Structure formats: structure tokens, C-alpha cells
Image 1: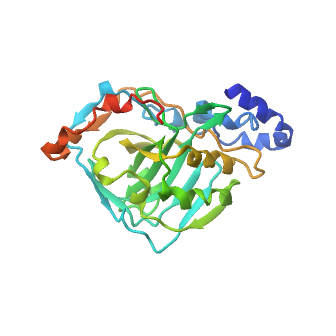
Image 2: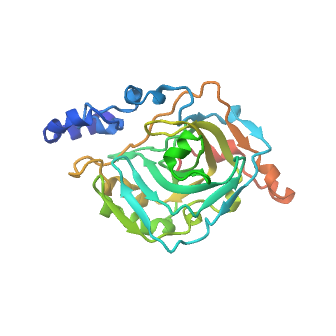
Image 3: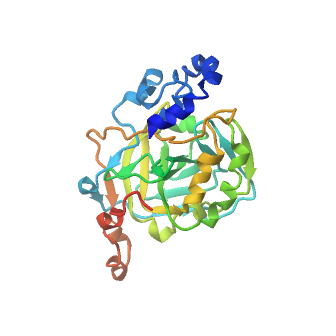
Length: 319
């Protein structure tokens, strides 16, 4: 499928030849190389950013049979996630993804975190479709299976004033949510309806702020999660990031997912659709992935209602 996509992209390559030498100094995804062959795709990121070649990188594949259950991973306390801010959100096409800047009033604590963290932005990773074949776009995987999309909500420790300072101070925590094909999610309509306004790289638009909790599963479904220490999944791949990946996925209908690669482009000329903007999984090495024991977080009468992890994930990608 990738070779067919490259062939299609190469039909218009001449228009990009002059820009290729400049783009060669930047990082990109493999799906961009057909038109900008000199840019550095994920396997070459370490040539530009040495930390991308270190041994605590993200994303990873989570093998559920090898996780370590940690009873200290209690439920999160979500602060102001249920509040609609009076300020608008700024949504941008940054040339790599769709990113929404937040007002930093939404915060999380507990959940095994060391302190309180404020939400600074969220962004997405997604796949593609070629003919009747759908390619998943989540960065993390569960037992080798990937989802159509993945949402990352980036938080920094309360005492830091910027993401850069939080990275240097090892104060970054990311909440990750898988997105699967399901019923239409009306909470995403205002966001998706504005994608066309940020079709080209560098474009921004203000959108009405939502209660952040409206974009993620219900609180009762957020007691089951995985935890490990990794990195940012884009250069400079800074490490010591605390990762939380929730087991319960978000649902969007397929037509909503399609809007991301139909409306958003990597380039300013709208010739290179933004597709497959994910980093492949990285070696886990000696790291341990922990899992919350959600049985301990629910009343005894409800614990028996939990669906075992393996059975829940058996539906694979995952629609």
C-alpha cells in the first residue's frame, strides 16, 4: 500500500524538487518522503536529534501478559476537566499534526503521578485509507494491535511555566487515548468542522472551548490504564516523560476519522495529505510497563462486571 501511495505522490514531485534540500534539514514522517525525499523520516531522526536514538523512547508495544500490576496506581483526580473555559481554544496545523492549545486550567493529580500537572495542549496521530484498505494510525499498540487514531493530552508539572522548562525538569506527563471506529461522537463535531480552516501547514483557528472531559471516556472508565516512562514521540524525543495509556478507547465514526486526512495537509500547497503521522514502536528494553488494578478501584459488587483485558482487545483494529 505504501508503494502505491508513493507512486501517486511522485506524479507531482517536480513541484517539490526545489524545496527538498531545505526540507532535508528537518524531520518528517515516512508518508512525506515520496515528495520530500531528503527529509529525515523516523528511522533517521537520531541523525538530527541524538536523544531519538536513546533507550527510553516512545511509543512502545504493550504486551498484556507481561505487565506488572501496581496497586498504588489509583484513579486520577481530574480538576476542571468538566469546565468549559470562557476563552477560546487555538487549533493549529503545525505541519505534523492537529494541535489544540489549552488554557492550563485543566489539571490532573493522583493516578500514581508525583504531584499535580496542568494540561497545555492535545494533539492527534492517525493513519490512512487506500482504496478499501485502512491503515491504523495509533502510535502505541496493544499486543501488536493498533487503533485508527490516538489522542495525546500533554501535561506539565504545575511549577513549570513552559513545556521546554518542564522537559528539562523531567516534569512532563502525557495521557494517551486510543480512538476506535464506533458511533458518531457529537462532542467532536465543533473540532472536526473546523479542520478545513487549518488545511495548510501553519494555519490556526480559534474554536469554542469544550469541557475537556467531553472528548475522553467517562470518568468511571478511566480507572484501568497502563503506565511506563518514555519520551516524546516527536523530535527532539526528550525522555523521562510519564506515560499513561487508558484501556478504554474513544469512539468516533469512520466518517469523522476520515476528515483528518481529507481536510489536513502536511504542506502549504495542499498537495500532500497529512496521513500516517505516527512514529513506529520503539524497543522497550529493560523497562517495565505497569497496569492499574482496576478491580481494587471499584466497589466489590461492580468488580465482577469488568471485561477481562484479553477479551476486550480481541476485536483488534478495532472497529
